Length: 231
Ligand code: SAH
Ligand code: MG
Image 1 (cartoon, rainbow, N blue to C red):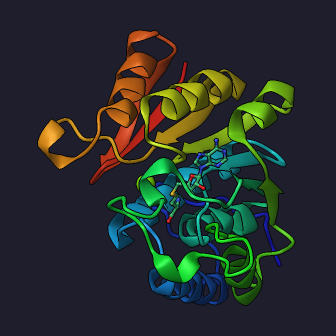
Image 2 (image 1 turned 30 degrees about the vertical axis):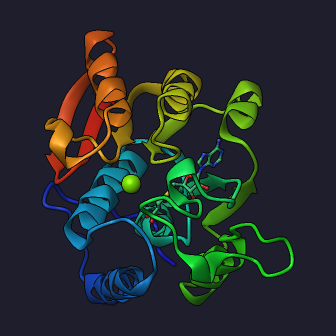
């Protein structure tokens, strides 16, 4: 695939044979829409466009996704990685967050592995990435986010935080991953709800902390998705 053309400001691809790539993009978007998960269509496309900018801005960019679940957001970011020659590392222990466990609001019994009795979204994530034919642009990382971030040294052009939404996991993700974003790179945070009636505080709090740090500026939003750029 040709990865040399730079995306224009409106996110379309300025090249004569752009139709082919556009079809690919639409194919991936329609696939993403069908994947089980927590990413509204418009937010997914906004996520894609932010990652596309990061991929266009940095040569051989590295993208990181924290919280993959069944691969819905993975396809949106992976589509941008493929178009720009970036590589997306998609990190999850695949056992679900606290809020996904039995008895909690976001539990889905069909994702429980019958042998272990635990949620296991890895087979679903693999199927999604395989169906999307994104395996050369998307690498799965199976493990605990703070453990991985404590050993991770590659600078990130784009980082998407959508892992555990409790106080402890959200802050651990912010503290562990925000410093890995390069200057001029992007940090995206999901489930940021200014009104507590709409959702939990921790994603909102870390988004505020990022701005208050003076290291990030707001660079767009869609629904509960917030895009930040590192100064
Ligand atoms: N981005 C996904 C939704 C992610 S849900 C989508 O588009 O649908 C949050 C995910 O974070 C869950 O899959 C859960 O397993 C993962 N997660 C929570 N805490 C984690 C941790 N400490 N390490 C790795 N993954 C974690
Ligand atoms: Mg989310």
